Length: 422
Image (cartoon, rainbow, N blue to C red):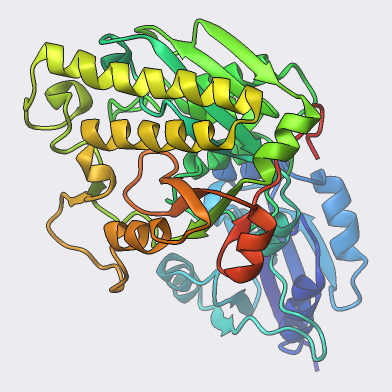
């Protein structure tokens, strides 16, 4: 009796036990043939280079005992297997539940191929594995926390007064949640080029490259992501950057003093809130009206200047206090910077849902979270990272170790030291 030909297709870039178990289950339907995405296809479709070149991936897949044979697919895109299938003429096409799609099912029906969808189940006694989870667990790309001066990196703000933004680069020692104010959109753009770690190169140049890559001139939403996102991620330690009516800063000043970095770590932590909701706008109703994409013009030019002056003054005082390790001065300036941000952009703490519909689960509001933590005696100051609208509260506390021990939800922070890209 001739066995049926069974076909599966994938990238298999980070070959793991989940792949092997998938091959084992698929091989129960007959002789298993594997189509593997080419380096070019993966780069064009997923926008990042493969961890292993196609010939190495082909060698590893062929070495698995459940596989009868394997080839590099000659097609392109998500259906790159079409030429392989048409040449092989398999009886069965097997996919896992994550890889199933109506297009694949229709493709098989048109060719009279049995279409089988397998649940993603680990081999007995092993943990469930996926390439995405492995990459996430091994990704060392930093994130960033802005300490003061947020929004000054937008020219529609700095035109009313130049000033500094202050950021720290954070090692990803915690789960970096999406849409939570830690520049995950910029971080995800970086992962399209360098999936697991930053390259070892001049940090300022790297930050400029990332800034230019993210702000592709072809993007059609009219939004320019602030430079502090790429700078905060790519430039290690504590950094301040000076903005004067331009998207890229005119000046930089970095601090890599170990005593100061340890001092900051001993007084900073974060607590999670709900992520920023879909359809949320943090610029609606802001003090900068149509310049920021909002629909109102609520304040005068002089009032805007005063608001920006409060923001830039707070950032300057914040930096000076950190340099002196002055905790009370740091906490006051940190708080003043956040208050200045909210005065200019009230939707940071009261986000507007532009599509009129929210699918988020009921959860404490931002103001309720602020009230809860600001009332704690060990909390000296608080702010929301990034543009707000949800995510985290970043707290200045008397002692971070004591606070995180008392509050299991709190996250301790590790500042990335210079020349540490892994």
